[in-house]
Amino acid sequence: MAISGKQLINGLWVQGEAGQYQAINPATAAAIEPVMSYASKVQVAAAVAAAEAAAPIFAATSLAQRAAFLNSCADEIMALGDELLDRLSQETGYPKARAEGERARTCNQLRLFASTILKGEYLNIRIDTALPDRQPLPRPDIRFTNQPIGPVVVFGASNFPLAFSVAGGDTAAALAAGCPVLVKGHNSHPGTCELVAQALAKAVQKAALPGGVFSLIMGSGREVGSELVLAPAVKAVGFTGSQAGGMALFHLANNRPEPIPVFAEMGSVNPVVLLPQALAQNAEAVATGFVGSLTLGVGQFCVNPGVVIALQGPELDQFCRAAATALAKVPAGVMLNEGIAAAYHKGTAHLAGQAGVELVAAGEAIGGKAGFCSQAQLFKVQAQAFLANPHLQEEVFGHASVLVVCQDKAELLQVVSSLRGQLTGTIQAAPDELAAYPELVQQLRQKVGRLVVNNYPTGVEVCDAMMHGGPFPAATDARFTSVGTASIARFVRPICFQNYPAALLPAELQNSNPWQLPRLINGVKTTAAVEA
Ligand code: NAP
Image (cartoon, rainbow, N blue to C red; front, side):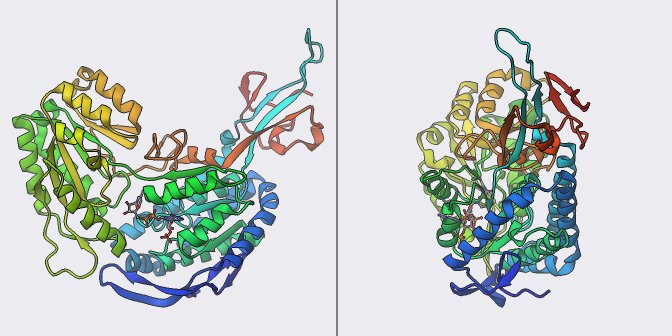
């Protein structure tokens, strides 16, 4: 199916009623065909009504049915073939290899959620059977499970047009949980959004699910995005993007007559601490690794290392020389869109203008390159100037970083303790060196969602053990991850059944344990049936 520029509402592709626009190729600044449409408020309401109607039907599907549906979503995305990869490259400036890698990640993510729900651990089933003879009071039969929270609105980010977009992590987790999803597509890659939505619509149809299980709405975040978040039938929001966007939606959701959770992942500066022995032993390798992480994907990752903290000394000088050599070879890169490139230029100019900040290394200059290009930059500042200026902790989205030079260990700890909440914190340490810095580890643990040692923060593995989130302002709720199978917990809510007729219990709570799931029965984890 060709790209139509339409909205997917209740299983049907309909022309948006609130205006038209075209995607822009960031490598050339040229408009891309075809003309796309924006949804109206009436169309948003129709999509929400369809999701509300679909919610109980989708919630009643078995784990096996939902797993098959998720696998089918992955199959249909793969079946889009090169058309998807080409469109993605056109809309983002990403090379085809990146598009291919991200498609694999997205499909593997859907399949991982399929296998995860079949295991049933996420339901956290607990059964305390009745103790009619207990003294002084009998105990009733009580059974606990997790049920889908209800329709979820997903806002994708510009920088992951597949893995954090229409069928990305939030959508996969919500569908796996049994929640209908309404995606507010990102206007930076609308054709990619539509192609993926076509694939999901096919999977919905093949599974004979109601059309309202999945909708794609295009339009302005402030208009249709806000409308979606305010719709009473919507029960949760998944967001990846800017601080301003995430917080606007968070406040909107909290001021509803019925507040709902907003799980916003809003990026951070991801401090990297370079310990002296690590540099003394291998300054060049550390510098090359750092520059690779900083400039990967033109630095357009929420886990990009935006702040480096180190002790002054000859080892650090060696690191700086090696980083400058490596950075000089980095070509000017095409950014995702005009707004992101403009924000990068403004952010780096702002950094350069701050007291005590100097530019110490840079990549290839933009020169006469077409499109929305940017130059990689490494700045340096002394710790006291960093501590005195909170602006230096603000994320500049792209391949820019600030090296904070500390006079001694105490100052280094002071800098770390001044940091706000982060997605990640990284330490480069020689063998045994980490043990000499217990306060550093202790402090970083308070600040981050993921603590990395002798790796770099870029590259977020989608797995059972991943934590992608962190204390505010990295995310709105430090208790949850937005990547990996644990992220399903955002879209379920617990319910317990007390003294409930056995024959009417949800399948996972029935005595016979028809799905053979692990359950905590009277304090013991088992897959056995409950003795009636
Ligand atoms: P964004 O501007 O926050 O947009 C993400 C989504 O949220 C878009 O669909 C956007 O819709 C919507 N939105 C933004 N502000 C909104 C508001 N006030 N009310 C309702 N909806 C709103 O993020 P982006 O476009 O991906 O990138 C822009 C900046 O975000 C970057 O420069 C960077 O600083 C940051 N960023 C962070 C991450 C991360 O992983 N945390 C990833 C990418 C970017 P509209 O575009 O239609 O307004």
